[in-house]
Amino acid sequence: MLIFITALILYSLFLIYFQKKFSFLIDNPIKQKHKSNLNKNIPLSGGIFFFIVISACSLISNYSLTNIITIIFLLLFLVLGVYSDLKVNFKPKIRLFYQAILLSFLITLLKLNIDKTNIFFLDYYIDNIVFNFLFTFACIIVFLNGSNFCDGINVNLIGYYLIIILAIYSSELPLPIIFFKIEYIIVMFLIFYIFNLFGKYFLGDNGVYVVSIFISIYIIKFINLNNDQVSSLLALNLLWYPAFENLFSIIRRKLTNQKVQIADRKHLHILIHKKILKRTNYKISNSLSGIFLNLYMSIGIFISIFFYTRSDVLLLITLINIILYLISYFYLLKKN
Image 1 (cartoon, rainbow, N blue to C red):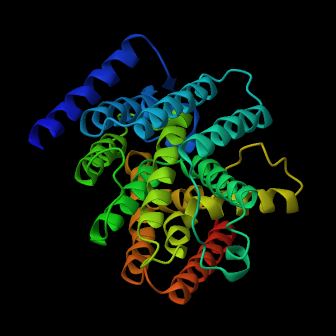
Image 2 (spheres, one colour; image 1 turned 180 degrees about the horizontal axis):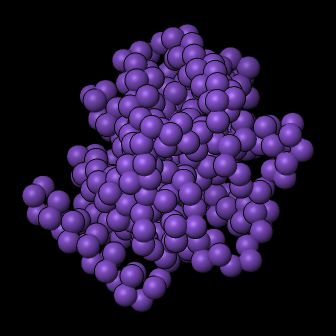
């Protein structure tokens, strides 16, 4: 494990050096107030970091057709994310189209399917191949793009991913034989979290795409493996934040006559950052906002893991999460 940690740290430092030296995938946080805790250009290293680590570790520890297919599609999503990060004239609808194509093939080739939902009217149709495909597709695409919405401040999104993996690990339930050991997955996320916390690099669209697909596959495999003792609503509780951020943002923009595809600064994490900024400065407010959200989100996630067999409790927790989100959002919107 010590060798793995050392290798990740050295690899991270090399990646930062390489991207800065060749000015490849560099973000300018000075031009974005919610990222202004930094005074220099920052590499968008997320996708490259995670793709190399996931690919190398997966092929070494578990050389299988499933992992090979997954790595190929992670590479394709990485390319799509890099293209988006390069600020090329890439319209949101075109980006969504390519996401849909890649995701459709990924679901088909990996035979990704949700075995049950523990929601009676959905479970009635879940055995239908077409319905199952569309349902799985919708869940992942909403989570993928919602994750992108959440990636606006340091450690907010990567911390959320880390909490999910830690919660799964703490459940002591059987884990899917895919990728590599969960202890190494935790370390992988933790190393990136530390570098992101201190503003050494950002996820970027490329990082969001790669890690969101990775997390989606892992959770579907995990829930299906334990479907005889785990409620599928656990997946909803683990992934509710990015999914709800996506759906709420679309509804909010529609109701205020904004273009759905145009980014704004009215997400929950941005409002929290503005509030914290009033009491501190740019040097720490960005990461502090992310840490606050990480701690807040971890409460619901770890409570959900404790009640993983109880669909009624899990549904109640989701509803409470959404209600608290809305109360916090409109309170902060009014105060800001």
